[in-house]
Length: 316
Image (tube, helix red, strand yellow):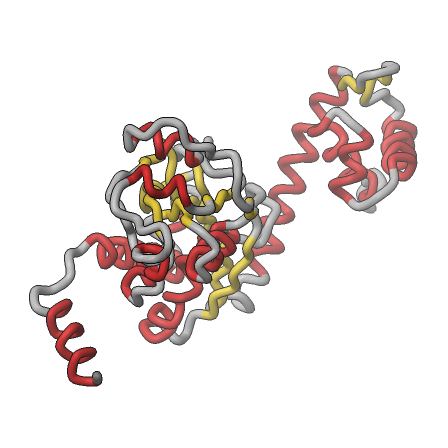
């Protein structure tokens, strides 16, 4: 006996419109026009013989029938998506998709991925640098690394590190025309700014007990990698995230003139759906991430710094 199914294309359009309570937002999500979504929903209502929405001038409301049907359709679509995902699991068994912010990817993760590949060459990491929050139910993402306070409803979140900012600059600025010996000396140098960070130079000078410095001047960059490179190039003094400047400090292309720091209440977190650690590739990546964090926190082995200095002296 043939099933009496509704127009299947209309189900996805209806579910999106019901979730957003907006044909416009549903159209944007589905990459359709407002009119196309509206027509699909109307065709579904005609097929069912009931109104699913109450259409108001400035609002779209679900009827009781629409609320019931939306819940059923959403559950069925989720089940279908899960089944599809399971069928494709073998194809992607060794592919790990990581969504992270651009700054974390460029400054922290990418320079270290070779170590992960050497440990687990069978896992191919697919890195997506995107500042938007991912929807694990809809996006093909295994884990995400996000900046925040760790409040991600319905998801597991493990704290990686807290953002700590400290002044950094090229070594050439330390003993240049305006030598940097005390915090107030930074007022004679160009201040480099980064958009979207929780602190600015006014906060740092206040923490250092320095008043009267015009902190509004200086170039502004949208990403920390630009800020770090500008400081390396000698364009001024930057507030560097200590997690991102470790390599530059070790290479002595950047120096910290002072140890006055600013600590954010937020930080980086590894985020994933509950139960994800049962999947081998995710567990291996998570364990490796945490080991890298501990590696950063561990003090340098005694004698290593002295050995490096002796090597440089011998080369001279």
